[in-house]
Image (cartoon, rainbow, N blue to C red; front, top):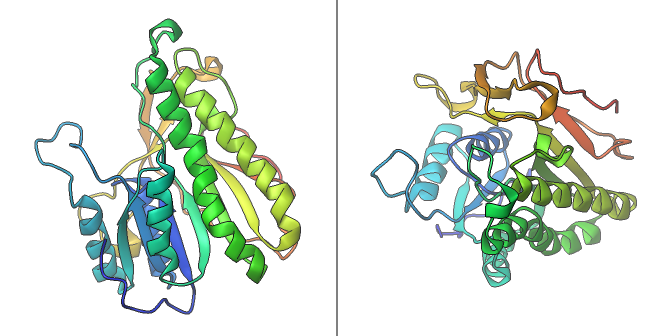
Amino acid sequence: MRSMASSASSRGIVAIVGVGPKLGRCIARKFAHEGYTVAILARDLGTPPLSLLPSFGRLSRFADEIAREEKAQVFAIRIDCSDSRSVREAFEGVLSLGFVEVLVYNAYQPVPWHPTSFTDIHIDSFQKSLAVSSIGAFLCAQQVIPGMVDRRKGTILFTGCSASLNGIAGYSELCCGKFALRALSQSLAREFQPLGVHVAHVIIDGVVGPPRAGTSGSQRSVSWEHQSGGGDGSMDQMRWLKPTGTCTFRTGPLGPRRSTFVLAPTGSSSSTPSL
């Protein structure tokens, strides 16, 4: 964990759980650019796919990179979202920075890209997927909600995908965890919106690619890998798309009428709920 001696910014603290080289890092960069103190949390273990270089310390490199480019305070903290003790210890570090204005939960247990027969799924793998996708979200939310309720302000954002809405053959692990996360989000939204806490479940209908080479800072753009398999929920046909712009959502004091939003590139077959 990096030193936490510096004070938080006037915008408050955002804790982003599940920060890798793609979506998580882009979210962290956006909040840093907007003037928040950013805490990025991830396991930071193992070896990246198709690479012989260990990823230990990768989270700290992300923090240093964003802090330098956005001139912001960014702290890297290790967390295992399937371990309640690890979550508690990680958020002791986050809360030592001050009040958490925003929690973004972006963690999930990676699953094979190719469909896996239900009878071939091992119980340990299934439990791990549920633990990271939903139990981890439960544990992290419990760490920040008391402070948000006390101050009657705060935002919690959960990231989902198509599997949050539709069961997909061969992807039972992913779908069950994402369904549970969406249910948790809706329950928290209905319970805590009257107390000043905004909760939203954001469905990103695709996979966000890393920042393109040759760009930096807030000007970096991301690529979308969009499902093009049609209505059968297939995930084995992919094509790369470029986003047409950045979607920024703002809510009034009464919050939105729904807690689930779908973000998809132009040409997607996904429907976007009216707000």
